[in-house]
Length: 250
Image (cartoon, rainbow, N blue to C red):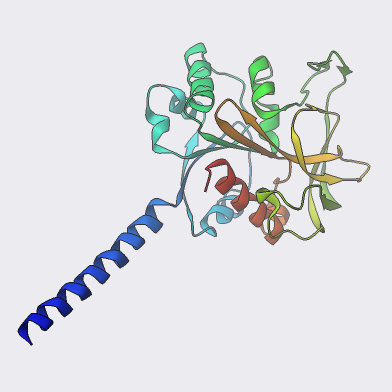
């Protein structure tokens, strides 16, 4: 009986060890996101509420210009994903190199949101990284097409169509949904990206979100996300969560 008791205790302890191991694994599997902001005002409370609502995501905000120091050295290794929600132009050569290395060689995930499409107007590699070019001034796209200044419009109600219902980033979204958000029009999108969302609204460019790869990294750009009417939209939150997990390979 004593022997059986010892076996029983050992079995219980083994079971507890497995449970503890599973819980530790769940914690380890949370997506660690570094969120870069700066250069553009936004509704902070409702924006960060999106990420606080995601139980499988932990995050920290880094504001420009200090935020770009993440690309220097090994600091980026603390994060699975970088989320861009800044509107910023200054970046050093060393930071450019670190940015490229983190994605191409280390495979860090990147989710670029809304106005970050207009970052680094004088750094052509950024266009290759996110797969698009927004024009703060008239200019030329990589394919040689001349563009005027890109346009925007606040508080537009539009219908969004899921272009690829089988992609992990669109999982859980209905075929179409409505959102009130800021629109962008007159920007260039690379023909090599994989389109995820579209709209036919006259005040918006057709393509709203896409996925791509850059070296070893997965990249998602989501044009949506200006203010509370977007941040509080359940479909937007699903989209952001899916994007974070997909670029982090979870």
